Length: 75
Image 1 (spheres, rainbow, N blue to C red):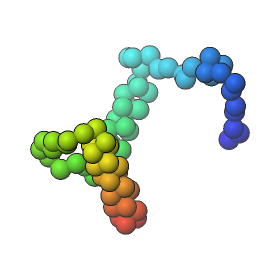
Image 2: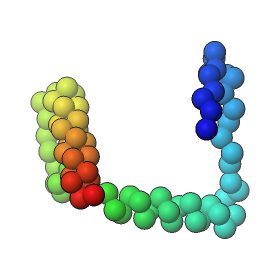
Image 3: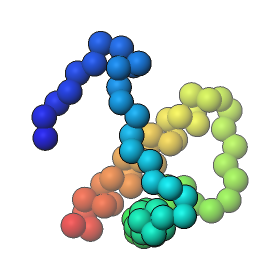
């Protein structure tokens, strides 16, 4: 696949759309849900309070890295 470069966001073509009632739309949704169900949860259930946005962002970053490491270890 070749790399395309654009000078402005307005030059980027819009992605192809499926009609809402088309059968391939439901197949794409089913595939996405199946993929999402295979991912380990990012956070444990419950409510976590953070003192700041920075603390929340750091916790999310740690959780993402832990998820990636767990997925690599499972392979």
